[in-house]
Image (cartoon, rainbow, N blue to C red; front, side):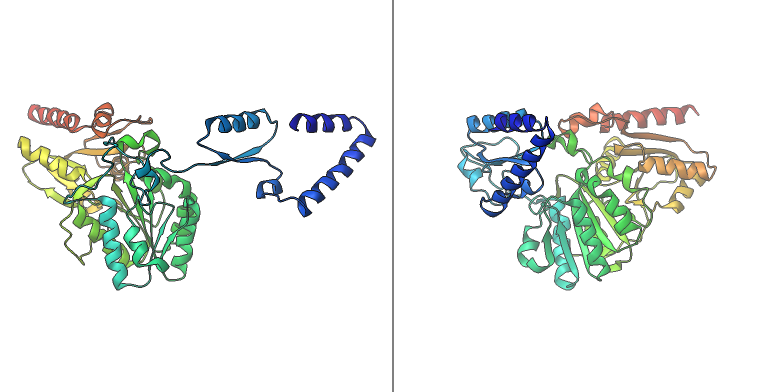
Length: 428
């Protein structure tokens, strides 16, 4: 049929009479398609359509793809598949348990282990759910990540205030802007690696108009097995340049809950909260506390120490353990607000003649460290700063510990920088 159609068109296109014949026969064909035959939406766009094809029948699938490859114009191949085909437990899974899994015993299947640990996503969602009981204006939006962002309970309890817009991050963000204009309180959660899809909407539809909302940036930092396209290491670089936003990141679950409160109770500007992948201990203690915007937290503060490490998120706790374990004469600061920065504390570091180590596991270009350096440079403050972070490249796939070593920003690498700085201080 394809070859005959091509030969027919080619023959008629050679003469004026042939062109008229082709136009006449095409009108007849289109009339039959519109009024007699059942058409599909792709035909309305002038696209050829093949399918539906059984995606589990390799021979049928191969034939369909081979035919599409031979066509000289655009074609849609419609393939039907069943999630988890061939493995009964996965076929019957309706909770997303078998979506992106680590190795497991296929005979036993995946079972939920009893643990006091919760995912960061679950902690944030539980605090949002708590506030939804108290405030009917709070609404939740997700772009097809109900399971991944642990929103299942919220969708079950508050179906009329929960919206899954599908894989459409751009629409999700503009939808949040519209709800904010209507005096609702949207919480929208998106993986860091997918956030760039809606950069324009954050910039123009939300931040430029200074519309209050809370944007949860999930899976920040290196994510390991999810692969190199899923590393959430760019969001600080491309969001920190946007005016009007408050950008925060918690060191533990209680701080995460306080940040949710701060955003939802104040609700006076766009708030963005980033949090990593993985599980964390959660005491599940309800809190109504706030955090003062733009304030950092001194975790270790000793006036006799002349070296300060600035870091954020869960790294605060791991660095604290490193310092205490090795009895290092170092101060530690939790930079829980990426934007605005705690300029009062930055001035204090300069006045106290502190040397700084900025420890990040995100891209260094456009990082918190680069913003700190810019602040000191603009104010003509001469201060020593060392950085750990990802250089100007894409990080490959691998487990987190391996990738931290690959990027020279593991705790061992940090320890080596500390020893070098302490050695220099001893010389001086």
